[in-house]
Length: 303
Image (cartoon, rainbow, N blue to C red; front, side, top):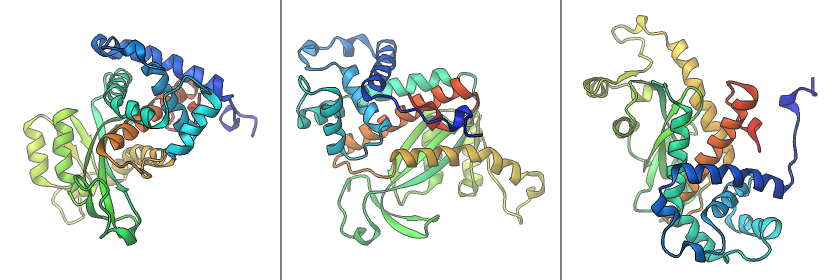
């Protein structure tokens, strides 16, 4: 049983893994990034190109370096002993490349979901400190506040991430909001930027007004119904629950990559790390699907 392909662990040398990531990133960079960004002023004076910097970041995430200091040390130890930006400069370059990574991720996923007309909506908490520090925390105070995590039954200081995810497991769109904002308000924002005709949600999105607003734009929101609601016997809550399992699996995978362990001190750094995590996940899931078909186990797609 253990000799099956999905039980086989592969350990790739750091340099070989980095070369594979760099090749993929270079193709996506040339394909999706505008020429005025690729050929911007003084770009030739950089110690390393944009593609190398992005590949380094993705490599550290695949290697499970969640600490910035450890990640930079690993890059200098395993990949570039010299001719590489010093740490503070490297961090600034990374933050400036957040828009480039967003472009690559967006267009890459759009190609993978051609013909998709249904998405699943859900949100996940992203705490920025321990609960005991909720009242004293000031990190990202321009967007973060105190909200309630119903799963763990505790209050937390941080933000809330709301996602549109396809049944194939790719996060199509997301919104970052304060932790206290209700999920219903985020659906409208997501639907405006990613107008899919069908949306599946849980009971947290049960709202007659929301359904009517989305229906005016030709969007159907399907949620489980309470037992005492009119027409509850016509909705198969069990089937909806099975279809929603995909987003729960995606959230579990993203959590293992560190999406709930942010130490960013600015919103720009927060956005860069979030976009990098989503791009890494999309690349690994796409490779896993190439190898094993319709799977949500992104870890099977390790480079």
